Amino acid sequence: MEKRVLLTGGYGCIGAWVARRLLDAGQEVWVLDLREDTHRLELLLDREEMHRVHFLAGDVSDPEAVRAAVDRVGATEILHLAGLQAPICRADPIRGARVNVIGTLAVFEAAAARKDHVRRVVYASSAAVHGPADPLAGPVGDEVRLAPLTHYGAFKVCNELNARVYWQDQGIHSIGLRPWTVYGVGRDFGMTSEPTKAIKSVCAGRPYRISYGGRQDLQYVVDVADTFVLALERPFHGADAFNIRGAVETIESFVSTLVDVVPEARELITHGDRQLPIAPDLDDSRLRAALGPIPATSLHEGIAETFRRFRALRDQGRLDLSDL
Ligand SMILES: NC(=O)c1ccc[n+]([C@@H]2O[C@H](COP(=O)([O-])OP(=O)(O)OC[C@H]3O[C@@H](n4cnc5c(N)ncnc54)[C@H](O)[C@@H]3O)[C@@H](O)[C@H]2O)c1
Image 1 (tube, helix red, strand yellow):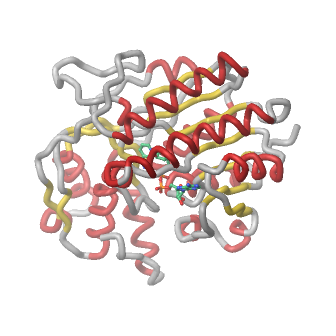
Image 2 (tube, protein in one colour):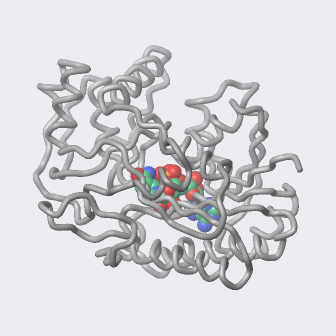
């Protein structure tokens, strides 16, 4: 059967890079999103490639819309990235639950209705399923008691549990992945977008303050997108959710790596000291055992590549500074 991936939230940051990766592999891409906002895709794709990305308008919290999209595409896999980020879920938990929880149920319902055709659901969970951790305790595995401190994290836990029920009751295979701080071109929104905004600010010669500090796991967006695509492709049976791991670093060492890459950053970038309330050091060994090797770009290379891309956009007069 020809592979046909329905990508919900495909106009988002991770979605744009997933689209890039699927096109590189010779596939067409079908994006289900609220509206046709191609600004992130345009940062990564040329005109000819843009024509291979097809848009279906729809709200994931509308089960009919998701089912219709699955049918229209003849989807063999669903990669479910659509969701509202932590600040919106905090401000409006009802809306957050509608999109993040009902929307994920709608994706699984559509997969269950077409299980003769849809082979797997891969969905974005989040490191926010983990609450804060004892800094001396070492890396936190997948199989710990999940105690998120945000609605956003609680919704993601709910999705992971529902995915297991769909496996148990309907035999729907699924993989949930839990990114932490994703950084790179296209990351222009959300609480953990600040490291990317710092890189962009340096490129624009502007000062920028990262409002927090402490440790986190910085994951280069290309690696994260590739990991989602591997989760679609590699052999897998059942329903599970996994930590993913990039560079576990303090914000201080993120800034000093940025200074190594671009010395002008020393004068421009400052940061706070508040630790975000998510376990910063996550163990991804179960993911590697399940899927095999996972790409891991070093922090230095990820920052350098992001800076190079921002600089190229700047030189073309296309560096959008409206998110700073
Ligand atoms: N970026 C990160 O650091 C990070 C970390 C952990 C988890 N995640 C999760 O990964 C997923 C993708 O993240 P991202 O950074 O690409 O997010 P993003 O905010 O850049 O993109 C989300 C996309 O979902 C779409 N969307 C929102 N509501 C929708 C709805 N009701 N129906 C259809 N589409 C809708 C948006 O229009 C947007 O294109 C999300 O589920 C997010 O919670 C991201």
